[in-house]
Picture (tube, rainbow, N blue to C red):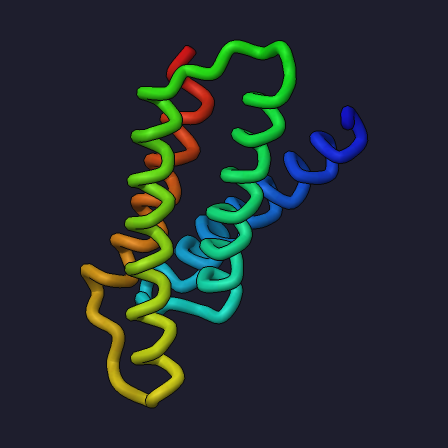
Length: 116
């Protein structure tokens, strides 16, 4: 179980890097990239799996914090999905949508690290 948890944490970090890295790399010309969309999916799935593993184990789970993190993850996913579909269709992605994807991902990372 420890190895599975470590692999899930690694994939979770890769998803966060894809979301925030994609946002920062396109900051001057905001858009939503494929990597941000796939990172949002990865974040949502691996986050839920990590919570499931924590619930099965002996660890204490802060359900309020998990609820906030799930809401943020859903927000990132929805913004990334809308932006990704617009970018694929050749339509312009609004600045607010592009910055909302990356900014909300960054906020979710801050909540994970700073909320003890």
